[in-house]
Image (cartoon, rainbow, N blue to C red; front, side):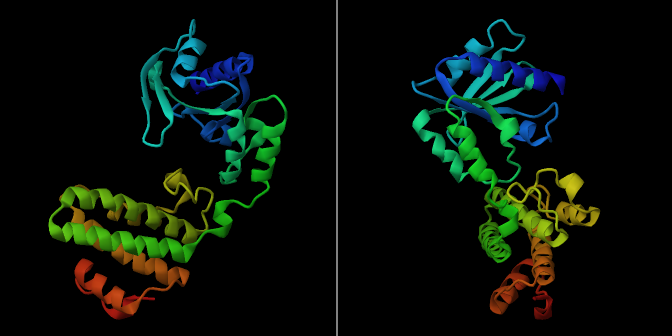
Length: 267
């Protein structure tokens, strides 16, 4: 892990030295205490003048053992970089006036003392303190809403599969799997990564839950089995959590996905 930590230290120092940088913070697993040698290094940078992320990073790495091998703006509009050793960097560059955007962040795993890199006027620290004071998203987890969205994805996926669009049905299965992981975390009281339910699932969910999850995974030729297993698990989780499902909908999906499960399988 020393290589990732050394890279983080190097970039934090470069951010502090740059007079254009007014405020900066790091985020991600390194600031949460769960980082390892495969972790990304990720930063938000606020400045009074525009900073090009790619130019800044290449200059910051000049003379170091790291080189930018690949640069791209990802699907969410964030500049991403792959460096020597396949180390990844995410670097948001924003105007100083945009700092209040951090108030929209969830408070889960927020550690202001590890996140702050530079704070010229103390305002960034004050904003992070406000976020950290809020309860985590897991404390107000919407179990019924999660189930409702899961059933919607199941219906969507089944219709696409029935049409013969197996590639698309496989893509939609990912949304089903994520929702099932959230409900499984709720059932087991393992809520530390509610927003990113697959994060550390191997160490935080029971062996039984992981086995059930494995049953809803597979390739393009396994979709009927995966969707049927997903529906069976959905019914069990809904019952265990005391959640509501429409009886007519249960019957229709059961007939389509599970060989007509009896209605008494529904909660």
